[in-house]
Length: 113
Image (tube, rainbow, N blue to C red; front, side, top):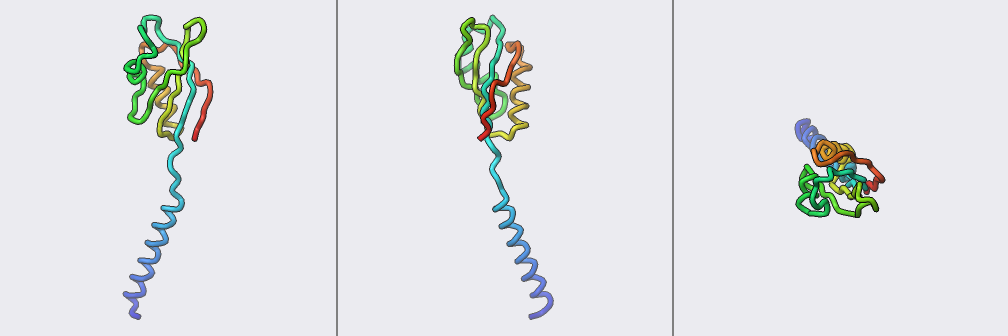
């Protein structure tokens, strides 16, 4: 075996090992699910409306789901779900907080999956 052939075989073996290492070490990003308590401007006509909820979610793949309203209708409970990772979920909450129709947002629970 010539030196060039040996070098090529070693290079191919290293490339194969690297590709398997990357495939084995690949861990899909964890999805996030957050339960939020959101205080909205009283002028919001129907916070259950899907159009309204989807307008609060900024990035593709993120969605808000209606869970309920407080007994005094001062706040609503929503679930934010998306592909993650955690820092993207925090960015999505920051986007929701900056919406003029939102007075404040409180994270009630996290369910990272």
